[in-house]
Image 1 (cartoon, rainbow, N blue to C red):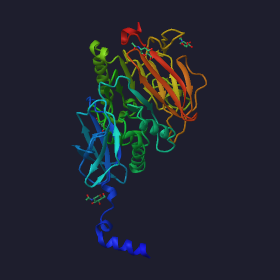
Image 2 (image 1 turned 90 degrees about the horizontal axis):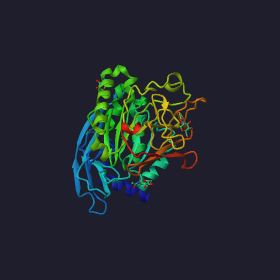
Image 3 (image 1 turned 180 degrees about the vertical axis):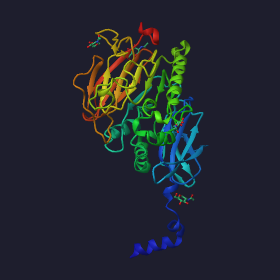
Image 4 (image 1 turned 90 degrees about the vertical axis):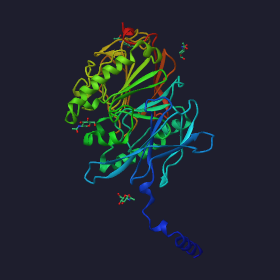
Length: 426
Ligand SMILES: *[C@@H]1O[C@H](CO)[C@@H](O)[C@H](O)[C@H]1NC(C)=O
Ligand SMILES: *[C@@H]1O[C@H](CO)[C@@H](O)[C@H](O)[C@H]1NC(C)=O
Ligand SMILES: *[C@@H]1O[C@H](CO)[C@@H](O)[C@H](O)[C@H]1NC(C)=O
Ligand SMILES: *[C@@H]1O[C@H](CO)[C@@H](O)[C@H](O)[C@H]1NC(C)=O
């Protein structure tokens, strides 16, 4: 009785709380970070379901909390499903972040603030950048998520590369997209979450993907490049080759852009500062799954003979889409170019390809074709993801973490290059 009376008294004193709209529509959610390519800056992106201001309050860890504040912009986005669900995507760019320190932040407006998160800025002082990378993480069966949450919060990752198929983002009038973005907040609010489009994002011309992510460049996150420490990373859309109905010109625009970007990245002064060039794209050039998809029925559409993407001077090519892990011997034009048979990855004469699409999604994992080609070096159907770290100008580490085997590294290599660039192949 006493409690009922007390509750009643509370209601009487605070009638507005009871009659107003549920505060959830102005509550920030789906918070995620991305690196816009300018050293010492970071973009915070989030969603509300009513229009609000777009503010980030932040401060270096240990300082007076939230003594800095940055304002951004809000873009309404209407999903094209039959409910035409409307949401507001907020973007705020933080700049002049000091190297080497942590920042704490929250985002939102006076109508609702997010939880408090932290991150480390990206700048030229990151000399040994460490990544987790994977594709095909869904919001059902996200096997690797817990391990990624812990690694992110331990602070051992500088960025995450999500190589396409970011949930089934437009399903159920984009509610699945909302749910997925909420789920990855536990990692993506702490480290830049860098993406490329995959086939599952294709609905309505990739509109959910283009609107919800904030990658560098001016292609609405479809293709772009960025630098981190000694690496130049190029993110591509393999989907321009599959969804021609959304515009064949996209395919040519990306191809021309890529050629120019590679030329620039390969200029001696740029290559001296950033010797490693790494590409990522959703559907692989080579793969040996038995999923009746492009690897079994064609000799991967994206270009066994490296026809869709020029790759002069590229060191490593990262792919997903196949729900498995596969490491290849150095390969170009369908032929293996080992450094030597004893040490294939020491001064390899072609790019090294990794396919890592087994993070965990509704479609489970794929089976392998029992007779792979010569380029296939190691395969696993365990759920998991890949670690990558550039240690210095000559050494790059890649390791596959198995979620099925309690986080064990089931495959690892060092790529060792005394020389980078196209010339290193001869
Ligand atoms: C908030 O959104 C709801 C649902 O779209 C709408 O009915 C309501 O008018 C909005 N309120 C404000 C203050 O914009
Ligand atoms: C699809 O989206 C891209 C990127 O915004 C745009 O360039 C292209 O024209 C769109 N295609 C169609 C058919 O609307
Ligand atoms: C490349 O190196 C691996 C590992 O030593 C070896 O098994 C394979 O046969 C080599 N391929 C070629 C074409 O030399
Ligand atoms: C680069 O890192 C590797 C692996 O840790 C090490 O063996 C090598 O000596 C380093 N090279 C330089 C120039 O520091």
